[in-house]
Image 1 (cartoon, rainbow, N blue to C red):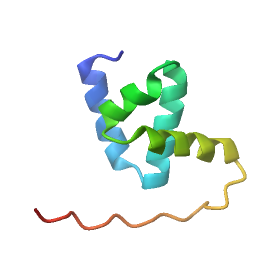
Image 2 (image 1 turned 60 degrees about the vertical axis):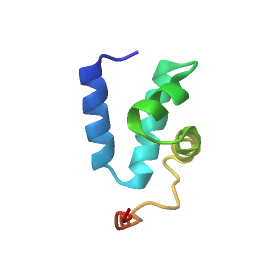
Image 3 (image 1 turned 180 degrees about the horizontal axis):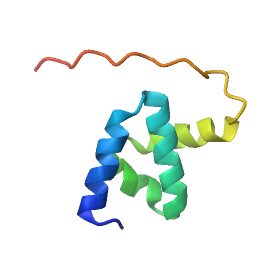
Length: 80
C-alpha cells in the first residue's frame, strides 16, 4: 500500500516512540488505510494487530486519558 521508502520511514518513526504512542500512531495509520489496514501495518511496523486494536481504544479515550504522563521504560533486549 505504501512505497518501500515510506514503510522504512514509518518503521523508523514508530521505533522512536514510546509504547503508548506506538500503539496510537499505528491505530491512526490503520484507520487511514481502511479494510486490511491493521494486518498490513502490523507487518510493516513489526507489531501484532492486537496492539493496533489497543491503540484504537487508547485514541478513543482522548483527551481523557488516565495514563497521561506515564511512560513505561523499555526493557532490556533478550539474550539469545
